[in-house]
Length: 371
Image (cartoon, rainbow, N blue to C red; front, side):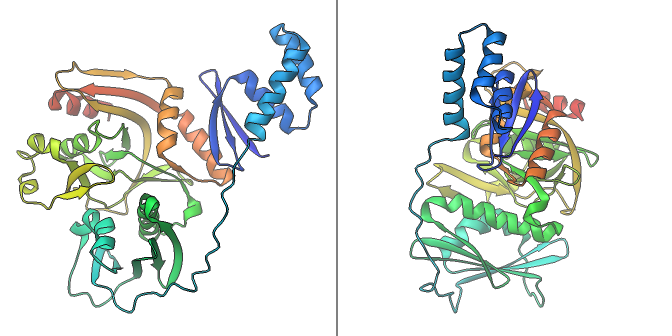
């Protein structure tokens, strides 16, 4: 089994190629896995472990065998694959909605079978819509059949997803856009992060936090202060230079943020409202102030941001291991070994912070100083 190891803050982050999973391990545990992978026999490893930890050899053997069973040979209840050759699926002859999106000089034609398919994509990209189009560069088709959503790009079937996995479809749709915008295929991306990215046109900062913590609201406030919104919710970073690339989706603004943002963005008063029942949230969309959707910038800082009513300003550096364990579960990370190594090397160099605030001006001032 191919594994990668990176020691950070006296722990070892270990990546397993066959599952594309990352684990934070004690250094001794990681060392045992390294030796097992090299083919060293359990008895030999147990002998040195017993001396190191001053425990009976039998206990060491039990520990190593359990580790091998739980980590290197995990039990997997593999679901029965449903074979679908799509012979029964017919691409629609006619689409109810056809939209054209322009990103700098690239035009996308997006075809949606009905309002349901349209609602999954269009709200985030409505600000890119153009009319009277004579030429387009790429065509995307989206339709639901037999409770599966299908995505075709330039007449090629990309994939299909069940109704429970609509968010994976939305992620793939966005991935197809960034590939075409930035002319980089999927294997060229190190990862996609569930974050917001802000820039001062020289470098970028990533803002992370649980849903409801105020990531997008903070982003809207920061762009009103003169910073640039590089991306919201879907932040792509490439593997070649580890830079954050621009993504042109609108900023999603939840209903409870309107009071704070309406004085700055009066257009939110009349913008369309969308109710996402699955996510239990009502949002409106705010156009990003980015006019250069080909831009890409280095990132040295991760900030876990949280709005807390009546809170004092808290801004402090936090453990990289804690940051890693919050970052990874919500991210798409490339399964390619070279990209996984790049990700570990990139992450090890980051500064990780926590920022909690209640006063918008204090938050903006803190971020401006960080730049």
